[in-house]
Length: 272
Image (cartoon, rainbow, N blue to C red; front, side, top):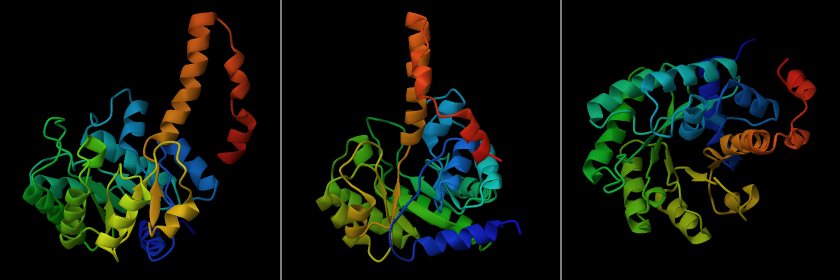
């Protein structure tokens, strides 16, 4: 029997009950199916990884772009998909709610709303507005009892505001506003991670590991984190292969990088 959207949402919620899991970030349907094939229990979209596939920089895609992408990935995968829904593609809470309702209809099992303004000089939405945006997203999700998990995301560390007290205050406010999961991309030390986990307990925390790290699934689990996402890391790895081979051809006229390619026959088997 086909896996229904309701089934995926129920499975996603259950994954957050205990333990720690990796939720890798595919950038298209093929990479989503590959990750499913490898046994991962859930997936998360990546704003940057997807944007690069359509020739745009991160944070420059439209809501139409994203919803079409999410619809395709959710339809192809038999496991839950969490959406990187950026800033909700709006500033005003009322518009965030409208866009979140649209996102829910793509079939996602979860989505995140961040507090990044897009302005490097003033990177975070004012506290009260940021909280109202989470409340609006919560109302939109609950309007039809979809069961979609809402992640409240504080962008402070990722945008150069290295203020753990501010991060914790915001995450606690987002939790009170209805966020099911809390996320502060950019925190990385044991002390930072533990402080965030303790501050929002018992609600689950998502940790970003977007580059080479001494952390492991086991270590992160011991710190109390519930899930680990990797952002655009897999997309960057894919682009590494493309750019290395393409540069060799363009600059040297040689083709030795192709020796590192994944076997086409194995890819065909995986996608049967």
